[in-house]
Length: 142
Image (cartoon, rainbow, N blue to C red; front, side, top):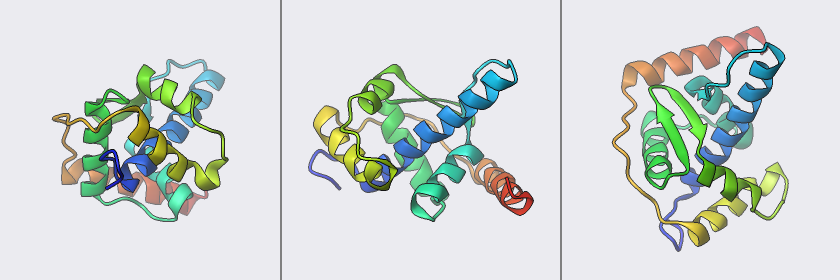
């Protein structure tokens, strides 16, 4: 754990959620669709992009629960949105590029807030469906 109680995984998942939501916003805007948040497969893809690894179900669930409980993410079913407090945290971070974004965000998290605890759960079936969706995208080259 970090000095303020946040784990590296929390920052990794938070940055992944920010990236995934930004990409989803761009897709929705180009298709004139409402913005609904990022799906779990989008968050997994962003996490893999950042760290060349896909978080386990438990890692993802634990971090999302902590981030949502702290008011930084909003989770409904399998859609994840960056909450206004999370947007503020992201916008006020020292800009360091994506290569060090996770470390920078972990420092920011430890300065800005303490982890919370939401009651959101990620069951195996939903997690496995997101993994399958992400794997199909990889196979299709998307």
